[in-house]
Image (cartoon, rainbow, N blue to C red; front, top):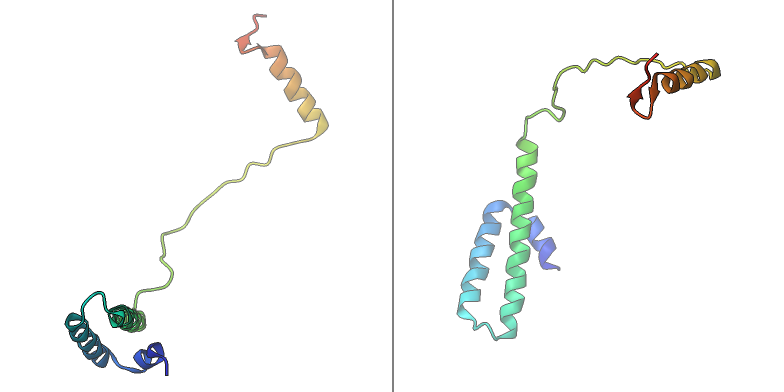
Length: 106
């Protein structure tokens, strides 16, 4: 059986005990030993399983609403007349009133 599956079956208290047991073994072994890396990986896996258990417990106990009500937003929509006559009149009016950004004197 895989260690991850074993750690998933344990409750939080048992996982803490397993993490402590792995730490004690880890301190007894020299860092150059191949078992050192294996124990570090086991420790990391046990800590990940423990943090997963804590996160799921926290999510189950969370009573906050999933949607935050921030209020209503009002908006207005101005419809623009894009008929050919209106566009032509607007273009002619803009050219007759201004000439390259300067107001034309009448």
